[in-house]
Length: 386
Image (cartoon, rainbow, N blue to C red; front, side, top):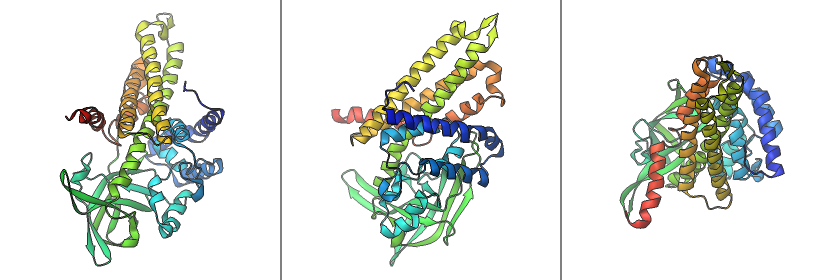
């Protein structure tokens, strides 16, 4: 990463890089073929991450986390991005949404997540409401002092089956200057709670060992004590997570792109055709030049967004630009890497085909490229009254 870092930030990057190289990358092919990380492998990764201080580095020191700023977290995310989400999920980052827990909820949910005893999931996407959150069909209806939840969520991803879900449901309708708007509220629902079922979703061609789940709610009764934040605060909480999540996607894409560039450089320098390294041919060398330039640009966008977040100045447009460019940059670099490696780029013997497949997902989750372009263009046109 050719970005100016402080000595502390460089030490952090080097530490995470060593952890990824020594603890995670050697397992990557095995877990890809198995379709999951074994319990023994996951426990070992988690213990090591806790020892290294990586686990919950994003949460404040006041709750037992590492208390790192957003710039440092972007550096960590970039290095962890070089390996499968299925593996680095065991080492890294419970959701900051849990900081909205009240005191009782902190003891039951937040603190166990900080120590690695519990794992949460973020459940907002539905079969009929992906990018269009306002089409959410999951409802929570007031019944006395309780709420009854009905509906379903899908594409709920995670490295293991979650112990509880942060579930977003419509709890009513509010009148706004733009017309009626659903009131969305977040609830904490434990696995095994009556009326709540978690099943495995279909296997994805990208991130094959990273799991996805379907969550079903059938007259699932929860109390007010299970509400995260206040009624109607769900979208505000979700937006905070999604906005920073787009920066983390951008950072992870940069890490994966750097890995692709390094593999391509090594191949271009050593693979010979017509009695010379293929890197000497313009068709290859120009691809490498484009790869390095685009990666540098994406890195700058990510660090710019992270530093603005630290200053409390990051906008949805900053996050959208970061996610859009970095994810599409990774797609282009992955395609170039396959082309540089030729037929070997599509063989399982090398990680290129896996990184190529995994790259496709980045333009979809945390908001599609089309959604990011909508956010960016809207910010440009609204000040002009369009």
